[in-house]
Length: 161
Ligand SMILES: [Fe+2]
Image 1 (cartoon, helix red, strand yellow):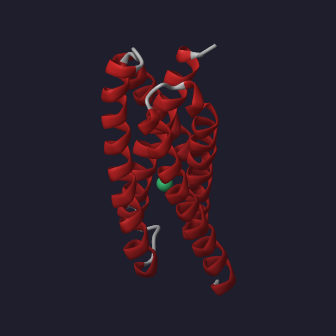
Image 2 (cartoon, helix red, strand yellow):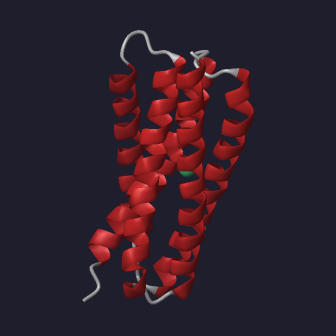
């Protein structure tokens, strides 16, 4: 049986995390927590996250027609998740965050994205529209690269300090 409610929720969460990750890069940068060698790579990552968000929005539009999904339910979940993720960032960074903590938070965010797209790819078979699975799998590949990039930056920064 297709668990539409659950899939909608997971799509909303993935979209919310996508937004939060973009906002996180921006916030960490404007707080001066990223070094010049980080900002080039991370702004490219942010750009890709923006594209992923657009791809997800467009597939959600398709799914309202092909699978009877409700885009406003998904959007609500996305907004809620983005807000929660911002709160988690504030809690994680605390009063006096440094570059290392900022990079490690990005690892946490990207790790969350990887997990959500893994879950979405595992339920993609339940969705009639085949484009959904293709989109999710291609984003998942990129998210793994994002996590890898953030992990490398965190490791490099820790060993250079
Ligand atoms: Fe990402």
